[in-house]
Image (cartoon, rainbow, N blue to C red; front, top):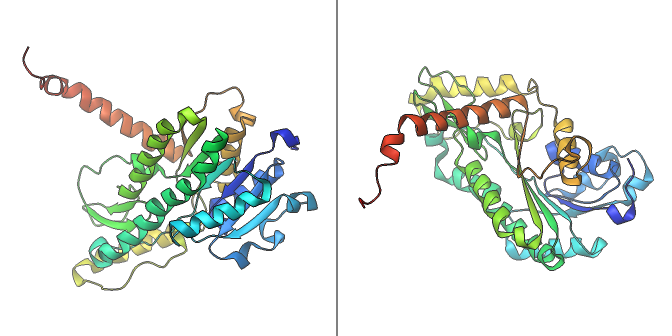
Length: 318
């Protein structure tokens, strides 16, 4: 699909060396838009063949930059400034870069959790605030945040033990069999940041899209080995079942990441299945994501109904 020059958007995408980011670059270029692809490892993305581009026209519409999202605010500003020199603007920022490591919470400790929060929450915000001045100046732009359905995960009524670390922290149930309904503080932060920005930036004609994928067959979450340092014997059984669970699901996820990113491009450009539809703010992707969010909404609606006499009876007496 070709795009007229007047309709061309400039996309600045983080984390393009794998997963959603790598696929998104190709799809955006195929729509006729321009892409500034960034990654921590520049050498990995410098060859056009890496993105499987079909034509020289696509190659000429691509620029690549080295970007470590954890490199600090001032460095991020310099990289964004360099990106602005290519085409003079950034129309779409896609916050995709993130990392993951699975492990038991007590064994991993707060150091690992802090690192995950730093990359997946604070550094994401740093990239956004580096780009926003340029969007505010033009009174136009789109911020895409790749989050997760885990921010909506219903609580596990039986309680349990935290075992996984991504933008979310996953649980194991009371039977000590690992499973996948995460309780996800970092992803909840990402969701809240996206919602807050959508309000604060509305007057500048800057839109926010919070993408909430379910389980997709990407490389990211399995790039790091299971955390096996500081092993505590009491957790041997849980650690083994958790590790086996994650090893078993890699490559079996039902979600197609290319289809997911095609939907994102449709929404941002107002094309395809997004034609004529209102801007969504939230974009759940995948049947699992839909199920998770519906269950959470039903759970909350049930609480509001059952406890409405208590909920409504806490104001000052008139």
